[in-house]
Length: 198
Image (cartoon, rainbow, N blue to C red):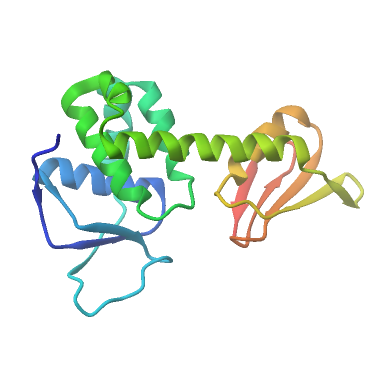
């Protein structure tokens, strides 16, 4: 169990995985845990909150990414990434504790299912993968221009890049757009590379 000091702070970040990894880096360095973490888009201000805005630091994020891969496991990185795509509240705190504890115990963190945050991360990961797998089978494109196809989706989780990578592999010479209407973002693929826009 993590015996790090809890601090009465609410961390607000930009909603990216690099932003969350910045929080992981700072928590690891200070041996402290915030009371909660929210993305800027999901946080509703409360007068009693002691809010700390966390600026994304890509150097810190990269160190955490490499640290997970080297000192814990690639499975932990995989679980973390997929859990991060979840739409569930409190995913950030579960991921934070999961990674920090992983840095203490190494790869065996993935077998420590008696810890609620380990079990929760694995459940979030499975939920995201299950939804993505469902959309692999049901997503249909319609032609909107010569050699340009469009698909509209309403997923619970943020799976647009997973879908994009899947269909790029299946349709490498086809230009397409996948539009996530729940988040108002779209993945555009032009047969060479892709981008996600909002």
